[in-house]
Length: 379
Image 1 (cartoon, one colour):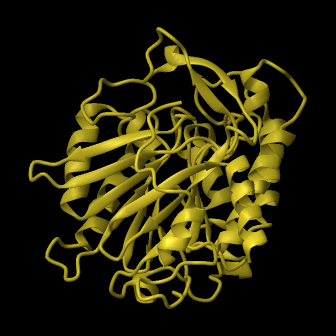
Image 2 (cartoon, one colour):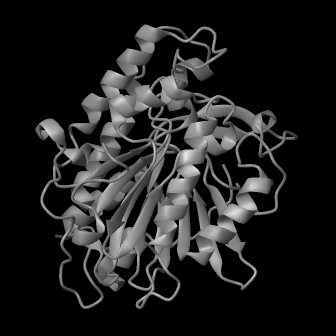
């Protein structure tokens, strides 16, 4: 895949040396167990909001009132590109299903339930089949799309009810050219396409990066999100004491390796990404977590004052993409095939310190199983 950033020791090693990254749930630097988000949030009709469904651009039970106190350490699990059906579509197979991707996602859910993080988040491309409502999209299979949506929603019912599972929209979820109909479909199935929440004193922003990538059919929605983002950032002032760390989550990364890299398929245009990252960092953003690339990558953006914003591009729970020699690594010509399975697919565990410092590690499912076995045998 790509260059790995922010790698820390294995969680097993770190748990022995640094209590806040323990497998038994987040703890503070003083060793006491931190409370995870307050009682299970509910939506209208009594549905649990822990299933990733935000409404009114908010996540119930994870607002400033519940989580706006002084920053304290916590950990979360970041996943990306579960993308039910990609293995088949990538290999040109028809009708053989997505059992492998469902199996890997269920393993990821088992990891989440065992670790008991403050929250878990899937950074887009929940499923593979394109939305039939996208303008100019030919050959979208309506029945397949509906089955993938059902299978994803069934899988997330296995997440522990006390652990919020948040869903970010990706280009396969709302289309390369999103419009009001594709956005409505996502919102009806998985909640708001962008929203904010608080977690242990940190402000978290989930954004719809596809609106920044191509807004030809959704210019009013793009304008609404841009205005919303400005309002959300205005709530966090650089003069706040103690400073409030801001975390950003999207599907498409602002960049893959370097803030000044050329514009390509897998990143956001530099004319947007550079001023956007300047603005985010000025309001305390310390980390931007993304998917889309199906490989691990990322880097550091430094603003004009030398302050840093880390961009973390996380590989897939499902299909990983291989680099193509001689191709453009930032674009489609750099796609050289695919691979999937316990040895290559995985997720990322992230620890946020009270000072906003980030430490994180990508782990394959094979590594996670090995770690769980070692932990259980030593306990």
